[in-house]
Length: 340
Image (cartoon, rainbow, N blue to C red; front, top):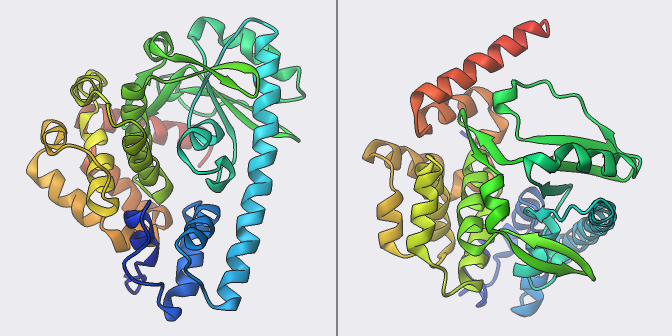
């Protein structure tokens, strides 16, 4: 196991919107910057340090500035593709639900470019998928051939010089189960993005979706946990009973617990104790999650760098063993079919 990483990034995120109780130790400055970059938070960390009137040594400060500007440049590129995509869909009477990314950052972060984003995620009803694909192909994007089983597919990928668009008909698929999209679209709320009509998930659905997405990726980016904290702070009147009900309806309530528990435990996200109790998995999975999702381990993104450990964690934390085993077998069959 690698040495325990410094915890300055966790301290900064946990204290927000207040300043950390102590300044960043000079010997942790480089580690803070590298962790911020790894977790897609370089821009936010620079903003938070300036707001708290905290400084870093010159070399670390310069690196953070470079990474922050680079992240903002990538974010502007994604924003441009997002706006073009929404316009193209509007031309065929499709109003997408914006998932994660720039739309989320615009609503929750001090400035939208402070949160790293690399692609455009859009959710549309199944009945509109083909129409939406053709509209996006008109932007010079090419549909990427899928290599997964149909049961495990949740989006169509379209790529081109302008970047990547993931067109979802399911919000996500993971652990051998799926979060279907049509019901989410039906409950989504109308919004405006630079004069363009878009939609966002209703607050309770977003609280569930963001948690499931984070847990599907084993919480390996602290950005996803920080999103949950910011969402809970931005929605003080969130209907938590409805969140619990929606999480249970997905059949994946444990995944919601893994993310919300970690966000509360590590970042002080304001989630009621009774919500965590209602979503909690068996005691042994809770204990395992606390071990796998400790602050130092998440900072170091250990599981993302260790494929066997990733697979083992997925199997152990799965809400239901049978769908997860079926998913694993389908992936193996696909691997063998490709000559792997």
